[in-house]
Length: 198
Image (cartoon, rainbow, N blue to C red; front, side):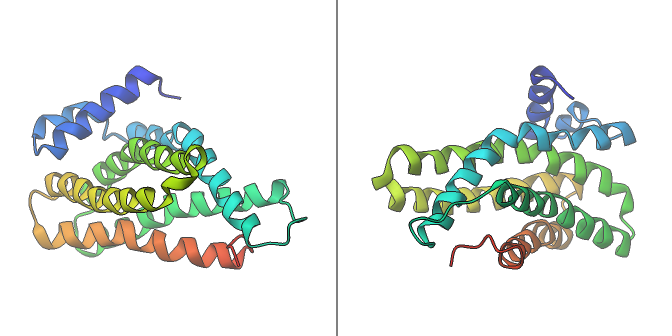
């Protein structure tokens, strides 16, 4: 598993790409080994995922009778949703890149998206933690989450712009493919697995 210094190094590369600086590619390992290692980002995201799961548990129990509680299977189902949301958009992105004969861009997309998930997960977890510690801040947090979502689209599009060499149509298509399916899939799986608040 990559250590903290290594993850910092990758994030420095992403920051350069967000600033449209091509030197950022030098910080990212685009080899097959680098692609495989980038999935360790999922483990780095476990702490903020835990916060979001506790928030979801709270929302779920509010819709249930007072004596209701959740068991370990509830968290397993939440984990399945997270895994699906991580992998399915990447599969769609790969299929899109193959369809337009740009398969060589798949490795940079995977590495960048995986490591970008780390800071985004921690920011999301921090916002949800505010709800726990400041219950009256729900309205403010809702606005911050909306701003965060817009910032996520902006940041992802900037990185994809560098990967696709400024091909605007491809940047737009990849951004949609990487973001929209996870939104739809999340809600569908939460309903299917019985973990969506009534």
